[in-house]
Length: 115
Ligand code: AMP
Ligand code: ZN
Image 1 (tube, rainbow, N blue to C red):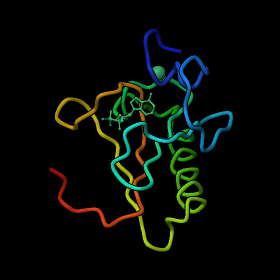
Image 2 (image 1 turned 90 degrees about the horizontal axis):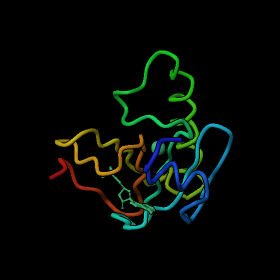
Image 3 (image 1 turned 90 degrees about the vertical axis):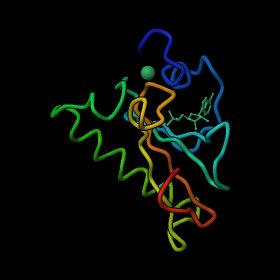
């Protein structure tokens, strides 16, 4: 757990969240400011500042994160219509919380390219 990390505090239960899925490696919860009818964040329990902080030892963890995101998307009823995964990274990427998180967005048509 990293000091002063919002998402580490959510994992630890120190800050409340609306849990969607949890296991020994990842935690998924609803975004507090949804950008789509379904907006879920899935995060590794391990504190990684962003996706670029991952290394070879995180290969299985990142694979697990993506496969569990697929399960969450399916369980949320997004599989047929489609959905989008987003990993904002760094300042230009629009990252505001520096604990790696995958956004799962769906429930409406999503424009492309992003602003
Ligand atoms: P990003 O801009 O990619 O770093 O995304 C951070 C996301 O975290 C934003 O979509 C926020 O709405 C979301 N967020 C911030 N605080 C909370 C919280 N306490 N519970 C749930 N989601 C949060
Ligand atoms: Zn953290």
